[in-house]
Image (cartoon, rainbow, N blue to C red; front, side):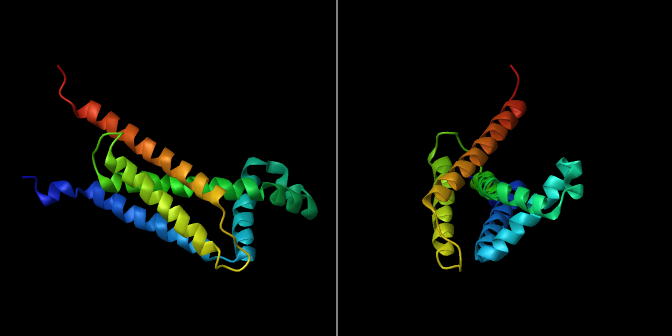
Length: 165
């Protein structure tokens, strides 16, 4: 019989906690109304653009504004994909060791899909926001890649720790 301490390793507990952190972050971002959400993504865009475009600070204010507005959609979709990639990665780690094509892997993806659905439903009740099924698909794709990354890491650690013949 396997002991509980082995079953819930420190790494697995960390993944459970990080899954909760990701879920909380997603929920908090979804509670922002349309104006707050635009301001948040605009601030991130400005910070990133000012690093990768040294001449950004010398641009006229209206040029900066146009550039930020042009990048809004891409930034929002990238944020969706990335936060759900993290959620998928940590949810996959929270499940523990398994085979790639297993019920546990499917459960991790199903969990992320259902959370994405609930997040988009939540946004229906936030002023100026709307839930979109295309975002659920994008979120689920991000989660899928997060799960895939965790499975690759799991495979590599198994291969490294397996006895050599």
